[in-house]
Every structure is written in structure tokens, then in C-alpha cells.
Amino acid sequence: MYNVKWQPKKLLAMFWSAYVPCSSQHLDAVQLALEQIDLIRRLVSLYPQHMALVTTAKGIDESHQAGKLASLIGVEGGHAIGTSLGVLRMFYQLGARYLTLTHTCNTPWADCCKVDEPGRVPHIGGLSHFGTGMMVDLSHVSVPTMLDALATSKAPVIFSHSSAHAICNSSRNVPDHVLKRIVMSICN
Image (cartoon, rainbow, N blue to C red; front, top):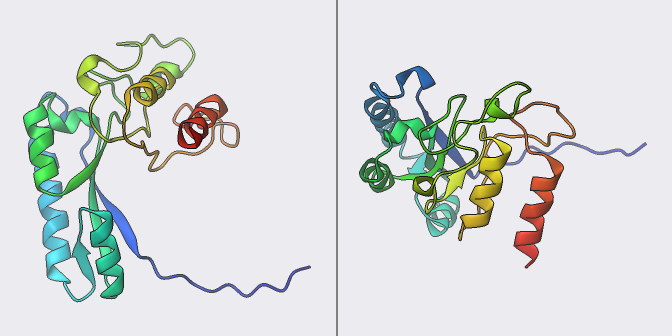
């Protein structure tokens, strides 16, 4: 038996998620996402002695050196951009640094994890041409969407809140063959 004393670690950085429900797709998803980003920015500005809004790795380092929590913004659910690259660019200008391509609903350009469930039919069969060219969070997407994103991405992808499918059998999680593909892309 090991005698290990747990030592709490200081949280250095975190992504705040601007989440909007799938029910807002094709309605007010963009407005709701903007309101979430506004809330995150106001929260960080209320506590400048503890937090700093950052958008770069250098900003994370600087925040850490100043003893502050580096706060980054992510947008949860591609439906939040209303299928508009202009909206995506504006979210970036406001500090968002990742976009989850889907949540529990398909977007017009990416299939969500639900299409991987038995008896479900893919909407697109992965990722459309519109869905390429951005840093993406692949949590909640279908396996074909994961593979399409990995095949076209020039930047690293993230799975911000997914588990390994082999450990937890859920359509939201990442199968081993996708995890191996990520490792191979990093090693090459």
C-alpha cells in the first residue's frame, strides 16, 4: 500500500462554455450565444484580482505568473453560429477559441453523436465542406464527423468533455480507432 498524501493543485486555466440549447437552432441561437459570451466576459471583469480573459497560450502563462485564473471562452454547439462564418469570426473577436461542432442535434454541416445510435440515419454522413477550416471541439459529434474533422484539420482538435468509448459505452464518447488516429497524427 502506498502512503500518498493528496496535494491540491491550483487551477491555472479553464474554458467557460457559452452553451445554447439545440431547441434554439434556426431561432435565437446566435443571440443566446452572444448573451452567454457577454456574461462570461462580465463575470471575468467583475473579479480582475482573480481572473483574466485570455485568448492565447502566452496569455495563459502571463495570467499564471500574475496568480490569476486564465479564463478562455468556448462555444458549445455549432448551431450557435447560425451557419454563418461571419458570426463565427465575431465570436472569435469576442474571445471564443473553440467551437463544439454539434451538441445533441445535427447542424446543417455536421452530424451529432445521436446518428451513431442503432437505427439512426446520418443527416450528412460526417462533416460538410462548410464545417472545415476552424479549430474544433469534437465532443458530441458522430464518428464519421470525427474522422472527417481529423482528415481535414491543420490544427489540433479537442474533445473537451468526452470519454473513451471502451471505458464508457455511450455514443457521445470517442472510440479507440479514433483515439489511435489522433495519436498517430501527433506522432507524425
